[in-house]
Image (cartoon, rainbow, N blue to C red; front, side, top):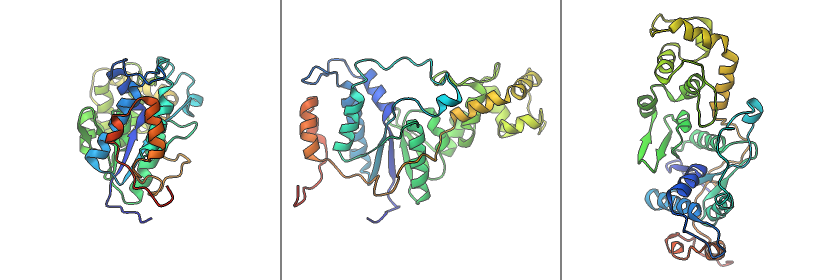
Length: 300
């Protein structure tokens, strides 16, 4: 099929919106089997809202499971996160099933996080000439922003372009991993440099550009000015290997071995043969009416 590059590609961070739905919706949304389904319902509503409001020609939802290659770089990566709640865990597979049933491409690759698959899909589709919208509330995704890639947070109704990233974080999109390497990220348990806060890190990067440029000179442009400057720069240099590891942990991999083409990501609308039994199992008879359906073929 023809690749229409005038059409935007919408890539949804499914994990982000599944967790949001689980915590936002009440725990009395139950399937006939007794299984809690609040996350599935909230996530499905997110997808349907995108479909209704944006009318996508191309759309994908990205998942993950298990650990990633980052755990081999740093054993304690994400080790401080709480375990997935027992009543949420079984909902993930139903989220995958409902994604496929409504005609949205479902992407997932072992040993890689959803961020990496999203980054790979976004970069490849942008290279084909598409504008790409990454639908997420995850700040890490800001590093993907460029001329053709934007980040859209549905919950906050905010868009981030390159100027928006600079305004929000004080650094350019490509500097986000360096920023996180310096200040750390408690959510993913990425260690930073002791004594380096966000304001200090922004000033260092505004002058040096990257953590690598800090290594060669204490102040290459003579413009780094804050209390304790020499001590902070000394800590960065003495711990540079740890800082480099943190940077790798914070960098989205955009070379995941996954098949990404316009046809793979084409939105195909709902398949009643999949939707009817699935919605009956989940108790979603009312929401079924809101799902756009594919036209039946002669062989349906």
